[in-house]
Structure formats: C-alpha cells, structure tokens
Length: 354
View 1: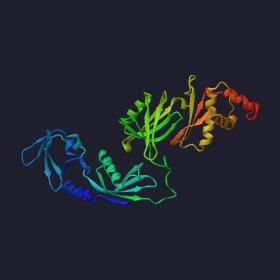
View 2 (view 1 turned 180 degrees about the vertical axis):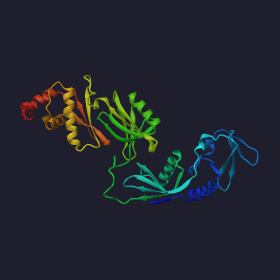
View 3 (view 1 turned 60 degrees about the horizontal axis):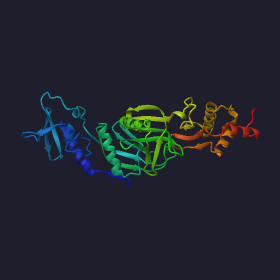
View 4 (view 1 turned 90 degrees about the vertical axis):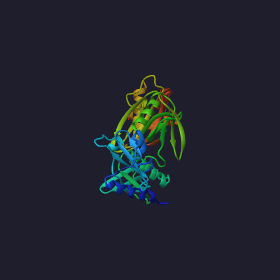
C-alpha cells in the first residue's frame, strides 16, 4: 500500500479547526493524536457547577462538546494560564510524502517545509503516521498529518545512506539513542559509537559507557549485539536545535593520536566519513601509531608492506564497523613487532633506504 489516509482524523480535525477559528480553546479528552493538549495535561481537575464539567485549578473551566468529542476551555477573568495552554497553537491539517530511497518524510504547509530524516520505510504507514504526529505534538508544531504517500521511485541522485538497512539503536535498559556510526573489535570492545537522541537519553547512555557496563546495540534487520565499553572515552556533543536532539560521539582514548599510554596493550585505528581514501588513511594512521607506541624506528615508506605483513600475522585485526566509520583496526602492541620488522628487513621486504 503506497497511500494511507486517516479520514476519521481529518474529519475530527476539521471540526476542531472550525472551533478554533471561532476563538475557542479545544482540549482533547485523552491523548488521541489530534495534536491537542489533553485533559490530563492541565493539572488538578475538580467537579464544576453547571454549565461546566470540570474546574481547572484556579485557571478556568472545561465543558464537554459531544460534537467534537473534546472539551472547550474557558479561562477565569485575569487568570494566568497553565504552561501547557501558554503555548497553545491553532492546528492545521497536512499531508506527508515518504521518500523510501532517501528515507525522508516531507510535510509542506504553506511556505513551511518540515522534513523528518532517518525514516523507517519498512514500518507500516499507519505506524509512521502515528509516530510522526506524536513528534509534531511533542515539538508543538501545530501540524497534524492525516495522509501519507510512499514514494518508491529510484533516482541516480539518491543521497548516500549511513546504513543499508535499519538504523541501529544503542540501549542500556533505561534509555535509547540512534547510532550514526560504530566500531568494535572481535572481543566486542566498543572503540567508537556516534549517537543521536534526546540529551537525557544520551546522558544515561554516557553514564553506562563511563561506568564500563555492558550495553546493547540492536538493529531491526540484524539482531542484537552486546558490547563492552573500554577503559576511557573522549567525547564530543553537538546540539541539533532543529531536531530538539543532540549528536554525541564517544571515541576510545587509545584510538586518538597522542592519547596512547605506555601501559596500553592495544590501540585502535579509525577512519571516518569524509576521508578521500580510507585505505590510504588507515595505513597512514598505522605508521603514525607505531611510531608513537614502539621503540623501533618506523619509516613512512614501510606503510603498505608493513600493513600487509602485520595483517597476515594478525598483529592487526579489522574492526566491525558501520555508519560514518569507514574503516577500523586494532593493533596488538604486545605482538613481536621487533621480530617482524627485523625479519622483513632481512628478507628485504622493508628497506632502510628508498
């Protein structure tokens, strides 16, 4: 099905919008997807004398309108409105288009264009419509979508996706964040994770990582992976006001240049989106890290040959990566690097002069 229409919602909203145009403040009887504040959001309610049904604290009154299936709010003279009504908006109906290839949803209302990125087109259109209206209500957009159309045409200019399938989620039992990238080794040690979510959720996940407690990454089309945080992370946070969210990145300390310490048993190499050549960049980082961590002198010209031999000997192992992390590797600093380099020099695979 490429189109989903909630005609009941449209008819109900048209009646509500007509009342709002008359200057009425309409309150939903319960959270019903209409984009209105619900009766329960108003705080303390009490029984009121006719013609009203409820008193709303010292603010005003509610009277049920059977035609609307909702309440009309009447403020008391000079009363200060409760916070939920202080940001009350008149509603507008809208339609949305889901672009499956780009995984975006666009809603146009007059000159206003609202875009949702990271849509999940494998979900049913009914569920997508419900979740979208919940987010529009949460952000007090004043927009309610009653119809969504799925656009499945392919295009040569489709934007590159971070993930070919569902977007992974990082969970700790209390909070969840959407993953923008990750890298972990064969022991499931988490070298890097990028996350997008509400600040409170990301803070909860941060505490779990910093406490070195196991954390789970789930993906709708790939299952769950239990990951182990490393000893210490460097972190960067970036607010995303247009999405009321934050983007946070957690990178293992020993994956960063200059952060290696003598007692480290291993170190990580990470190459991120934006690199012109991930193969070249990972070899460059490999040489720089060995210069930093080993007592043996390392020449830049050895990069390609030493990288190949170290991988063959499993001194270097690939990380499992995804999203904005293009390539990753774990370097075993306990390995016999002196022996490997001495042997390669003797075989003349590596040379001291160019």
